[in-house]
Image 1 (cartoon, rainbow, N blue to C red):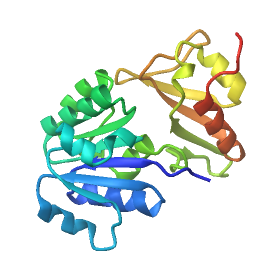
Image 2: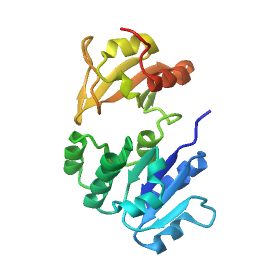
Image 3: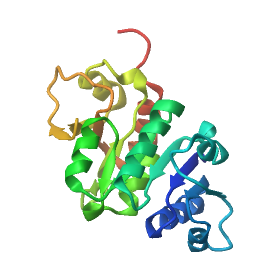
Image 4: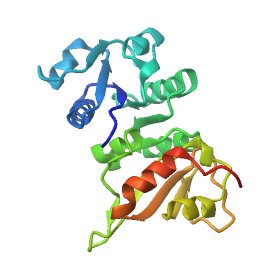
Length: 225
């Protein structure tokens, strides 16, 4: 069973409203921030989450949206600068790890990715891509083999895995790291590759093992070396 998380979304345009509904329908708690009160009409009367009028990088606005209890934050307003500023404030000031910023300029998106802030450029945006970064457990796989036996998905992991070799993670979980994204560039791990903070791990696993693998990625390595 997927545990409910609290997600704060900055921007109530079509993207923000779609994310809010998708996350709420999946059982999560959602707060949406927008400068314009009229924008909240996109959410409809049935939306049960918080509607907060203000700037998404303003401390008081974020506190009203419950950022201190947030498990994830998505900056999907129409401004690149506002999105990246809000993402940095949320990560650096409030310590929220699952943060993603929507960036219109693909070139700038790559720069921010190198700064350690996951970005999704408009040209390749889909709600599933953003949701996989915000609420990775239970997300749709990026690829599944025709038999439905194997999936490849971007996996989040406990910071306890940072500093350990990929081979240890594979041995303890039974999954395989198909490739990694580090500082915005793809990387095929070698036996001596060590997991670094900010690495994105794209993992191949059997469908029947998904729950177990997610649990082991989230809890970290077993005690001892």
